[in-house]
Image (cartoon, rainbow, N blue to C red; front, top):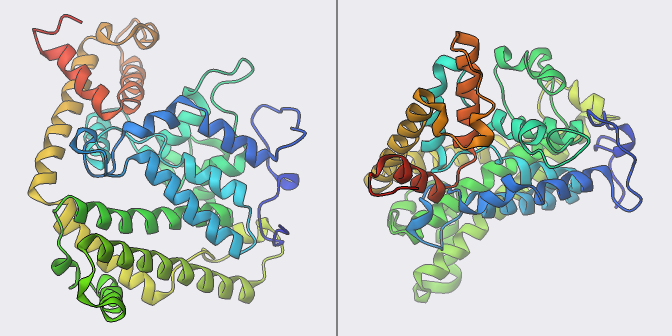
Length: 383
């Protein structure tokens, strides 16, 4: 496929921190994708949840299935816009590598624990995973990914934190933009999680078709499906037919809106994209409004549902209890973490200790976190 002039190209890549010989049969962005797929953090995504805790059922989405769905949406749009599909896939598959167990409840709890030590943000943690924590290569720490993949992983960041992130943090200081592939992966993430949380919420019985029929985006396609097929469809069929149309509507809207923006600006290169006065991959105002309304509905009716709240409340307590125990006694950590804890107790050392603990907890799956909690606090568990 011929790439557009504003697409990312390996020939103009800003490269890797540690230079490596090129591969004879793969592009640099394919190598990034392959390293991500084969890393331990990617495998653990299978047992990290979006909204529902892992043991609640096998039909709900995990971070792994979500990441694959983001990559599918992103590649579809990338092909239509003549962007680099390999790069957008690598970013999509890596964007949640730093997420904690128990979805956003886990992140919020760990961030609260880490507030005295610089806080915790899964987006920055994903970058830390690929830059530092994956350590199976002999020649370098992390996965030694290209700048463009790392740039896309870091979706958002405060200027205060950006100052400590080197090359990928610079755009937050300059108020510039990332590649179109990075912008696209970010928007595809939003399309995927909103629509798929609707799907999982309906599957779980926490949302109803009657409720969602009051949400303008859902209602538009619900009415279309009923008009086409009548009332004889099962709830499962209705759910699928409506959600597939919602996703398609948003994908087509992004393609058409972005094509119009690119035709108007006509950036000659990726550097022109970075220096543009606005993001060039975007929803139309109408689609953005409809998507925001859907998101508000989900916050009110799904993420704040009492059944979800009970589970996430337990999850927060588990994360906090683990963190407090490890901070008070680092010898409770596995040796590969406890051996790196500084021996003294000044403020700088406590910050290092806290970050090591956050690395350990953020890497846990749902069930591992629950098992670790039992190992530490259940007196009947001897190991």
